[in-house]
Image (tube, rainbow, N blue to C red; front, side, top):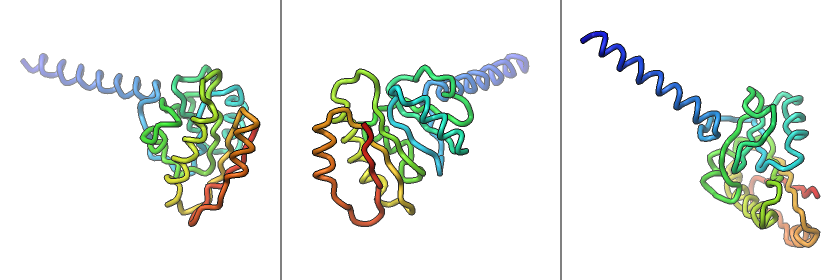
Length: 168
């Protein structure tokens, strides 16, 4: 009877460890980070951005709808979160108010790239209003018209700033 009980306990513990490892590898696990750099998307610039973040000694947190095919993802300096940048719960789970910097680069070939990126920026504006430091944010817009409209409408919010620059 004791051996049966031991097998159940050990088996249950192994299953729990397997589930925790699976969740981390597939971007389902979230961590209580601070001072990290968030990257929303997995576009062609991802590799160079993550390398630069790692070289500066910071942790990169990459959020995308699918795990990017990048050697650095899953290493101690790069954490993958599965999520969408235009879904508030997903964005908030990455603790943007505690981030050092944020890159919104989007994903390759997705429809409504600029709309989703601007929705992410709106979510970030609300989420970082309570931050205790300024946060630099780099926004990639694909359409020239979106860039022009964004620059025209950009206003200075009250309180802490999400300092936004657009990149084409």
